[in-house]
Length: 473
Ligand code: NAD
Image (cartoon, rainbow, N blue to C red; front, top):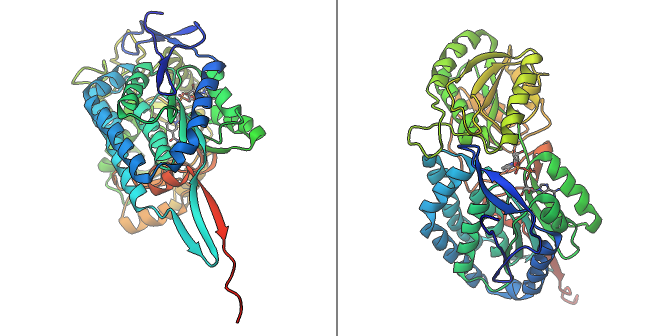
């Protein structure tokens, strides 16, 4: 092993019981960067046992102390902000500036958001003769993907801890350095031993033993829909709580009344963010049929501005996708889409020859094309046309997913369309992301919500304690 990625279990650094490793390549060059542990079920078991032992103590720890610990974690992350931003840029391929603002500073600020939510939260209330109290679910397994590695960890671990749960975290095996930095920050924050445990490894060796363990009370999973389905299936045997944040094929509906150029810029930005590797990416744009020619001219000019290059270069707008597998997947889906009749409207062909780069592309497709139906998870925008607003709503909702959507147009009409869309969040006319609003999906985009008070509540149970009614006179 060229580098050792240790697990963090019961407040201590521990090597995996297995020597098995997998090679992780640098997305910018394609050459092998590090060898990371595949992990072993025993590593997961050790972490689960530590979390179960720490549970009753942490659940009884006053909220103010749990808040203080989360504040120390946020400080420890903040001290590492610069290195976190460059590490995520290197591991994921996110352009450095975006890595700084979106991948690093936003999740650090989100720790403070969760603290405010916890301070204002109604932890108990009276309902007739019942005292209804909110209690931690128990031991929570957090399984996270690679695309926004710190953000997705914070969205789970921080609210789970504030609620008094203990945590076993298995981040993506593709972002081991980010995991290492997060684990160091956890250690520095000084949580009691066993409250936060972090295990490196892949899904089969480490993730699945968490899902099936009797000692784990909840699995909070973010990742692909296929893995989410497996998690839900396997969690059924022990009837544990499952929250799933999965994939998407989110529509951007451009109404006839929209400012077309503004809508194009916003949609392209929403599709290409993080090199197209964003769960809520706007990957289907719906254009009025009679505006298609104008749309094509305008979007071609915008695509020309997308400079593709190494993620640490200041001029780069789009970096590589994360892995050779992902690169192949994107290229295969584009090829299949073209075989099924998709036609290229615009693309960037000037891309580095080394590394996992793919050409950003805009294609016109029919609603049954694979590029209109499947999540590509790369810089590919599919264009569909409609004749009436009613038809636009029908096409937008014609998906297995339902994570996000955007609507562009006259505000009242845009709101009316938003109300008809089956999606967990709808942005009107380029409105900014709100980290306090519930985030999650309809349909096969998942179950449950993250962020804000809804994201805190996911990690709580209800307990109703009934008191005798006063004796009748
Ligand atoms: P993935 O499903 O391959 O892996 C996600 C995590 O699950 C990783 O930690 C992986 O090791 C683990 N895993 C894999 N197989 C497992 C198994 N059998 N049991 C338990 N754990 C297992 O997803 P990915 O490629 O890392 O991430 C990309 C996907 O995540 C995309 O589909 C994207 O849309 C989705 N995503 C969704 C959201 C959201 O909030 N809805 C956010 C980000 C990413």
